[in-house]
Image (tube, rainbow, N blue to C red):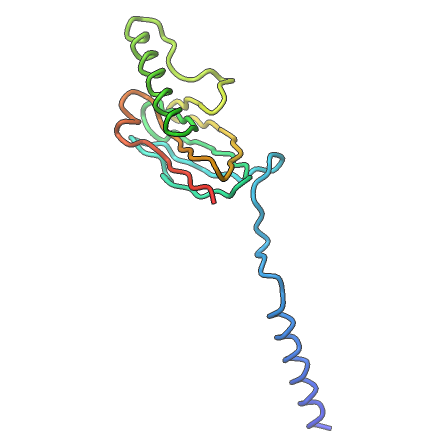
Length: 156
């Protein structure tokens, strides 16, 4: 009887291990969707984003939550290198107008792909990424982009 019980336990244990090994390797992770985007928290301080590089999946929707922990305004703009350069020129023109007393700097609240976040404040941008995207996030407050305040985004 003892030998039969030991043999039975051995067979059950072996079967359990075999079944576990045959299981799906899905760890339950899903990509963000428009209805349920993945959230990435980003700190803005001095002349840096933290993290300064993120990886997203093709078709994934991500909600970036920017926390300005610095003492000056920062902005965040999503676009490819050409769009970043164009936006940098636009922001420089706005800075020039600000110097002449016309305070138009920063982003409009409804501007797609860009926000300005004041010190101690939080702002959000939601974006859906595609495999052919070659985008980054840049801060275009005066001198920040040129100083390297850029977050690279790898779409896999």
